Image (cartoon, rainbow, N blue to C red; front, side, top):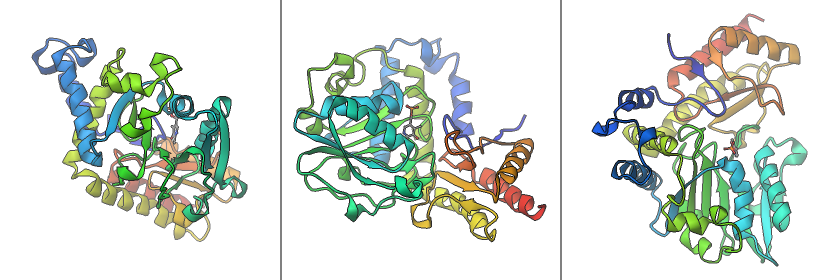
Length: 360
Ligand SMILES: *Cc1c(COP(=O)(O)O)cnc(C)c1O
């Protein structure tokens, strides 16, 4: 059987090469006579996997040495709670920029912990855009400013980040980490559930400036403290070893592709194939996002009416395209073109969209 045209939003496509390599090593990893899943997380062999995943991530994103790279569990959703629990103290404000459902969820958790503030929001206009960075309100007692770099459900993405002098910038990059190069120095913390651009579900990557942890709260349970995991090199308890192994394989693949500059060029090319069809369709395909806020990773669009949306999705499914339904909360169509989605899949979708329109 051939590989599907997988446009799933998450968990999503993995590179075929990565899957094949993992398959080759599955029952006997590096002459250990067992799979990675069966190794002790305290063994030398597993330690090699853990270190490789960390060092490749440091290399690809050029993470400075004063940042910790942590492998946690609980998904990005646990980070929504863990961030305020660790970093939001009495007399301080958790400042949130609302650009979609995931930022709303992050804010909701912070409200349970401490005082919050909405520094900017594009909710009024249906989350079709990213706010102008100059118009974000900052307070002098902000513990941090939280943003969602890519809005997986609405299909918008930040193309310019706020430059903050005295406030810590925290970004949920679950759906666009490693899709392009970024300046890690600009952020105090970056986090991402792995299942979109990094690997399988089960591991959450947290990149955090050591300075931010120096004043973090210590009066919360050990398992929830960032310092616990930083002090134990993410081996405080059993980590998701197989997910971290797959992460290391995906990172190796990203490096082989030429690193983030090459990956970014390819992502731009892939997204353009589909956005061009939308823009040249005389309004048949209607992009949700405003052009300057468009995402490279999640392309959201609608057809002229609900009936055509349904017809499009049904015919696409029959033609072998998987995962083109919009998120259940917003409907419509969405093509997720993460790093591992090949150019050929995007070309095939482009052709399908053109043919579908011509047949109506
Ligand atoms: C998918 C996603 C999440 C939720 O991730 P989980 O790992 O399922 O908790 C959070 N934020 C963004 C931007 C996402 O795309």
